[in-house]
Length: 276
Image (cartoon, rainbow, N blue to C red; front, side, top):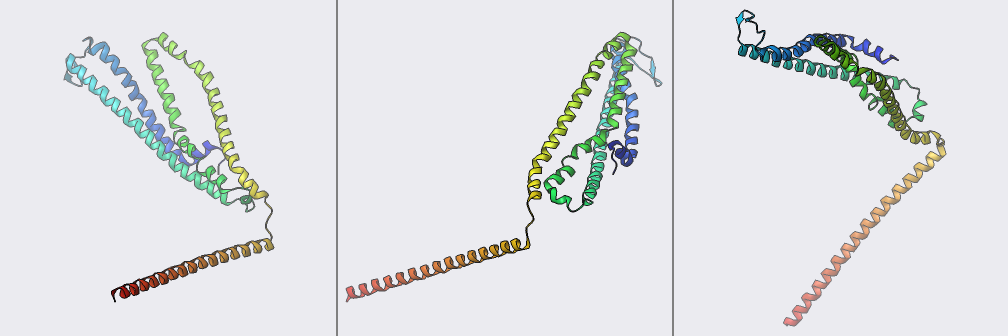
């Protein structure tokens, strides 16, 4: 199993990552056109200035030109939404497949542990390592390459569009990024340390039980036999107690039935004497 996570990602998902990058690159021109159409609508179509006489060989008026731009903008927004939806779904599929492969590889690594290792580790420590601690990695594998490429390309597209409109407005927008570049990595480093501490505390909470079990002295054969005989005698005594209680309940029910029969005979003889 690879020691580097990115090497593991490239080894098993590079074809899927290339497809994601291609679709991501195709979305950037559509995003740029999506930004340019509202400008064209506001500056020319609504004001009635610089309206072309023909579009694709068809004569247009101000209303028809405005309607055409509006429907084109709606189509581009829908297409961009479909592309983003497909990227998210396909990234999730890639992450789940890679996560399933990683859990299988980890399980194979656990099976290679020497047998004495399982005396010092409990199943409560091994199972969370394979299931719970690897779950966030699945989402990271699916978005490890496509998400930075998409966000970075989106930033570049927006910056190019802003600088083409106004140079000083572009500089004002870029001036907001240096503080974020300085602050965000430090916050993320703190979050990573807290996450690591949480995982270590979760493992430590499961550790004392296994440690106590590992420190317990092994039982001898005589001790095992005595424990087994004590369990057998306890079971036998429980069964005898149960049978005794059953017999006592049966005898009490029979005595009560005999008493009721005697009372009925006595009452019938009293009635016959009264009649005579």
